[in-house]
Length: 164
Image (cartoon, rainbow, N blue to C red; front, side, top):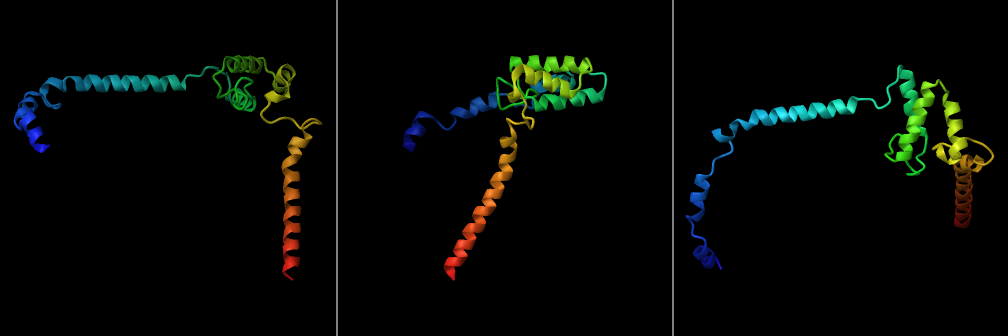
């Protein structure tokens, strides 16, 4: 097999091709280095500038943080397990715009949430309010913990009694 490769591809065949090519550091390619560096810097500064622009400009930092907090507490109805701050769904964009407008109209956070609950139901809140319908939802972790402690106590007591 090695003899066949030597017959088909002579040892000196590749050497002439390698010597005729220019090396990357040669003078032919040197004028591209500043242009490439300049384009890279321009691209990175544009990306950084685009990331810092606000879609919803506020007059005060308090309103901006309130907007961020509210949009993180509202569920995207389309995505269902994602808040509207992170969602790209068209309905989430509309809800963000509506919340932005309500904050500019000096509505309180409670008024904004009440409006959204009236329009979309209690499901829109990622942390539902405590009321008659959600009392079991809020008390279940505590009840499960208490029942687990009772179960473990009985199990340990029975295993201890059988050993004696």
